[in-house]
Length: 171
Image 1 (cartoon, rainbow, N blue to C red):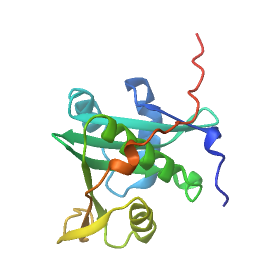
Image 2 (cartoon, rainbow, N blue to C red):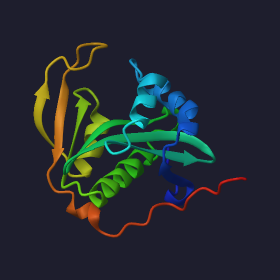
Image 3 (cartoon, helix red, strand yellow):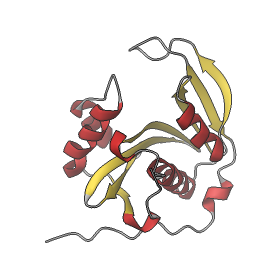
Image 4 (cartoon, rainbow, N blue to C red):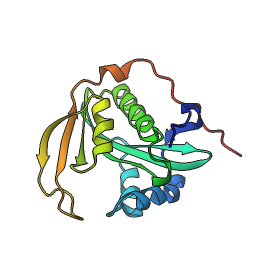
């Protein structure tokens, strides 16, 4: 499947109204998906928790979340609906998040990724993440190991960046 034109993907902050579509992405992406309640709890912590969504042709097709803890961004979730994968939407979301985190004062970023998730590991490597540790039996659904990745230099993401144009809101 080919990449989508970056201008066809709109990145915006997640709102409570987006939650039904985000749950569609979440439940289509993970064996042990987050619940509506977990997402709602994230909305209660706006200083800590930050989420972006990707819209393509007026539908939420992906999302990413991170916690900003002092000068570190901890990426908690990244999901793209299976029908829209391998089109660079995950990369657009990840780059937008690292730009946002840098703009909020983050100097470095971390995340956990399944040891078997080669495509995600490739994406994160492209964005400057490197393996720092292994969390044995981290994932509850199958006891799979998680690789702990860090990017210790977010300064390249602090350069000027133009996100895709915003979606037009209908009154």
